[in-house]
Each structure stands twice: as C-alpha cells, then as structure tokens.
Image (cartoon, rainbow, N blue to C red; front, side, top):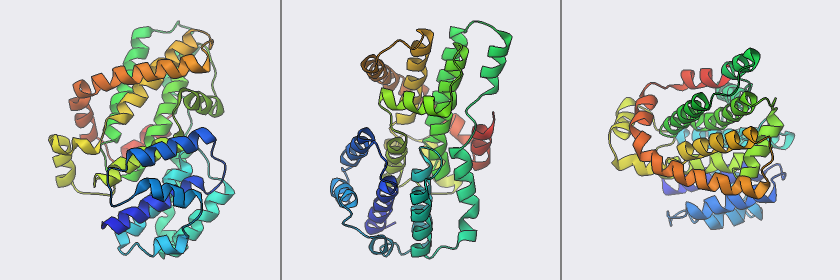
Length: 317
C-alpha cells in the first residue's frame, strides 16, 4: 500500500474506535498513547490524525477516497470491523458506521458477510473453558504448576497470533485472554462473567479497543497486516529481520494478565486497583525478558495456525 492508503486505513480505524462516543477516558488516553508511540513513521503524523478524528475534522468520504486499490479497501473495512468488535458486540452507532463505510468504499455486503460473521463470532465467543469446568466439577484445589503452564501456553499462542498477517488472527488475541482469566478465576472458585473479566482487564490497565489498535497498528506499519502467501510468512517466521514488526506485546500482555489474575483470585480478590496496576507492570517487565526465550516456540506455533484453526480455538468452550 502507498503511504496515503496506510494513513487512510489508520484514520478509519481511529474513526471506528470513537464512533459510539462511549469510550472511557482511560481508553481514550491509551489510544492517544498508541498514536504517539507508533508515530515513528513521520509520513503518517499519527498524533495529528488522532486529534483530527477526535475533533471530527475528517469526513468518511474524504478518507475513503484516498483508498484506491481493492486490497486496501478490504483491509480498511476489516480493521474497522475488528476495532468495533474488540470490546464486544457492536453498538447501533458502530453498525451504522460500518454500513456507511462499506457503501463509501463501494464494497458489497454479500462479499463482506463471511468476514463480518467470523468477527462477530470472535467478539461473542463463550468465555467458559472445558478445562476450567472439569477442574471445578472435580472439586480439586488449584494446581499452581498446571495454571502456570496454562498461562505460558496461552502467552505463546497469542505471541504466535501476533506473527500472523490476518486481521482476524489479531482480533482473536483478546477473547483468548478473556478465556485465560476465566480459567484462572474458575480454578480459585470464582464464577466470572464477561463483564467482570472486561473490568478486571481494564483495571490492570489494558484497554480492549486500544490493545487491538496497537497490535494491528504495528503490523500495518511494519507491512505485515493483510499480507498473504507462504513465502512472506515463511520469511517472517524463519528470520529475525522482520521481528521488529512484532514487539512480542501479546506474549507479555497475556503472560501478565494470567499471573496477575492468579494472584488476585488466589487472594480472594482483595488487591486494590493500584496494587493490580503495579503487579501487572512488574509482570509485563518480567515477561518481556522471557519473550526472546520463547520466540522459537511462538514461530513454531504460528506455522501450525490458519484462519480456520484460530476460529475453532476461540469458539471452543
């Protein structure tokens, strides 16, 4: 894609993030931080784009007019759908925005139906896990070693998903993190619903929409998002030069969420908000030190994944 098209895709993603006007101030600040953090690409002026979108100085027609290729139009729509679905079911405002976006891009609804359905399934996938339910039914005490292994495996899986070029692979990271928190809570005797898990994740400082934007934004600016073909993927997974595309953020975030959840529920949910934030920051730093060690396993895992297997993992209760 051209620099102009990349800028348009990012702008539309930001527009999707704010379309329902219901973002918490904390999430807005996270999105602003991401725009500033990804601004190493001077041609895009991301902090300016953020302000333009927030102040509604850009129109849908003007932005979509900058997308010339069929691939860039499709990618823009897919990213917008994932942004709207990142924190759960779409609001009415988000649905209307996506319909207007598809029309402005000249995309037919029938051609988008399969992707939209898959994204919606990821957003509404059950959070209960078979392993968690089986352990609770057996009435056994939490097995620390087993939970530690589950957390590490989840972090490796999400790190592998970060290496894949499909938009849905990036979106799948969030529901898999929610499943992990559910499993940890269930192991300690807590029956968690989706709202509680979202609140827990937000409390430690991880925004759902902002997390997707950061993950997808790094892929997009690194030239990975939307790429297809075994040659490209093989080159990415086999070498180190393109590893800059992926910061290992998903590995560290998932690892930290799992271990902080373990402390929180093992302690009877007595940790304060600040203690949760501090614990999360400490474990993220620890996980970042482990990322290089487990990178070969992430690459090996990525080679075994495709869109169908990713969807199956998230759907599986």
